[in-house]
Every structure is written in C-alpha cells, then in structure tokens.
Image 1 (cartoon, rainbow, N blue to C red):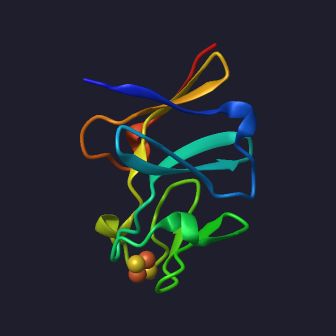
Image 2: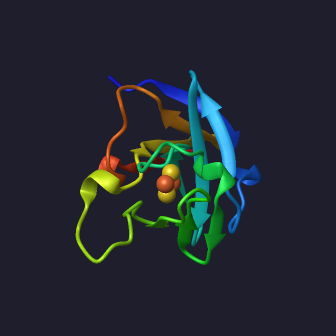
Length: 119
Ligand code: FES
C-alpha cells in the first residue's frame, strides 16, 4: 500500500539542480528534466554515498565518491554491460495541488515505479 508524503513544492524544484528532499526518514533527491520531476533515493547503489553531493552533467548524475554515472531519466547506471542492481532506486511520485508527493512505502523500485500527476 502506498504511503504518499509531501516532499516539496513543485515550483521550487529546478532543472540542472540536485534538489534534496526527504520524508519519513527517507533521504531523496528530486531531479527535473524536460519538465518532468523524478525522485530517487539519496544513496549511491555502489557504497551508499549521498548522491546529493554529486554533480549533474547535462542528463547524467555523477556520484562524488567514485564517479559512477547514472542516466537521470531512467536511473540506469551507465556501463558497457547491463547491471540493473547498480541502478538508482526510484520512488513513485505525484503532484497534487502543486505539491510533490513521494511514495515512501517499501524499499523502492526501479524507474518503472511510475509517475503520476494530479491537480
Ligand atoms: S559510492 Fe557512489 S560511486 Fe562509489
């Protein structure tokens, strides 16, 4: 069952910025690309370093610790081989009345976890 929590006002999440957020003890980053907002856990799948300390280079998020790279739109670890266990953990997100809400239930899922937009 979903557990939607407000994390930010949609108008305060900007492109080309790693927007830090959190709810229910879960640290998140919000990334806005082409007008779409994505929510990922603020924890690198490699060794857990906060991704909010990383850098955005166009549509690629770079972890500050060992420079792993992730495609922002999909959360996929950029690698020559497919390594799904190294992808970012996405959180379902919806916008209700201009407020971004994130589903903090469970342990998170892949990018296909979804995006909803309401009101
Ligand atoms: S902890 Fe992020 S690349 Fe190693």
